[in-house]
Image (cartoon, rainbow over all chains, first blue to last red; front, side, top):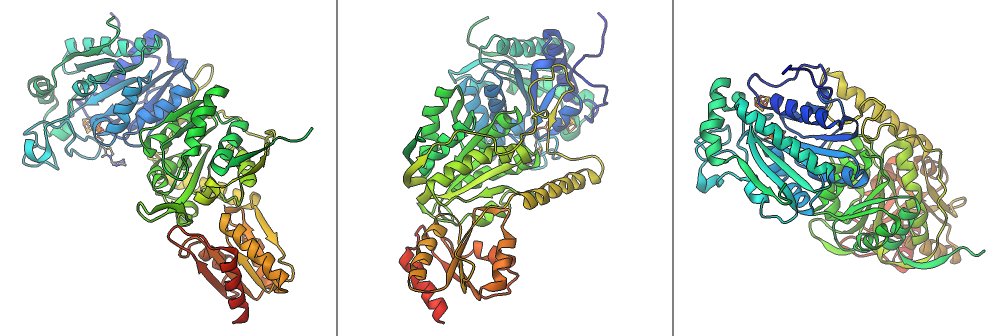
Length: 245
Length: 354
Ligand SMILES: Cc1ncc(C[n+]2csc(CCOP(=O)(O)OP(=O)(O)O)c2C)c(N)n1
Ligand code: SF4
């Protein structure tokens, strides 16, 4: 197989740190949009977070949202253009802290959108503060002694939480720390988009991803951290597939 | 044919005007005294093929508007004071992204949870910013249900023309008062620009981006803000709505906005009947502020009296407009209460007597 540029991704070099997962996730989203031939009817949302400059890389209509509010903004867009393909791209701080309400309610309304949720267990852009997904014992600049269960509470597991909502169509947790995982992640993202094409409702793909910079470890170790630490707390798999196909 | 005249509450009139003006997207969250707006929208929008969403919060509602407007739809949200505070984050983004929309604030008593009675304590928030950063809203303050209906229709056009949010600044009294309204057919108030910036999918064109982050060179944000300032100057030079009543020979000019000004107008009429030389200036657009009208009046009148349902916000703009060249007396009624024409007349007599 030949590795080619996608039509959706522009030629601009990204600003992501070496070893960061965002670039891989961008590539997967772009490949899916290309393969489904939907670039010209896709409208994306950029978050506040490391992926805020997403519009510099994706060549489709994009709106940059305020922190956490992407699901609400995407709701507005999708209701105005039900025939367009609308996706949000959000970090864990964005989706599971400041935007928890927007996430839960868009999911519960069954908004026919595709949410790409990049979980790197930390606030990347602002320099490594604790995220709602930071794990017990994991150090961050605002949990310097490691996140404690009693003080900060255990990490929020978004797929598990949303799986309780009847309005949700599809939830899957994937990772991008190995070639095998990347292939699976792509399948899940693709399904998230085909669900929308079939008017099935709310799909969310949680992607466990690396942030070597704010984890303060080397990229190779970051890959292991996802494998050894994150996957134990955030098990991969399909958490909901309402229509079963 | 007789024009259709029906009895509507202010809140309902806003909805009918919006729908007549082709608004097809509304998102809101309940708060008294504006609940008839989402309630009527919920009933009316499906009848015209539009969308009504009861959002999970004001934050969500305004961000739905952010999306719907970016997608090119005529859209509206409404709330009352505490809810508008929550919407401010989104309003700043919408203003920064230069997206058109109409936002209604049916003011209630504050600060905090305050009460649900009519008040005008959100004037600063409406005209001086409220949200973060350098932005302006076009702010319209009608003094009756018919005017509210007419201005709401126009608000959508001005929002589109200037690519700027328009705030309808009412209060509980206006929202809850029922008056006969002549329903007018919508005709655009101006030539409307094409929405070639809207997010509709990039079929046969370059992709569109709606954003408010201005990184890059140090000048990027400064340039954008300069552009906004130019736009606001243009709006100031083109849009000024004001009612003047018996100001020609007036020794005392009474001023206020919205329903307070309407009450004050009653007092001015009664004062005239008593032979007192009193007039009224009522800004209808409170931003842009009709500064020139006040300046001209200050050349002739001896004194000003400002009446408002708050403890002194609008009065500052009057003083600024007349550059403090004449004394400005103040009558503030706070806490969710409104003055009667008798209260105002009494004050007029004191001011003229003193
Ligand atoms: C209202 C508001 N609060 C806080 C911020 C600051 N902020 C920017 S990015 C960010 C955290 C982003 O973390 P996450 O969503 O996990 O994405 P990542 O950068 O890790 O990809 C925060 C708190 C902001 N921009 N707006
Ligand atoms: S800080 Fe972390 S998430 Fe952000 S670009 Fe760098 S590695 Fe990626």
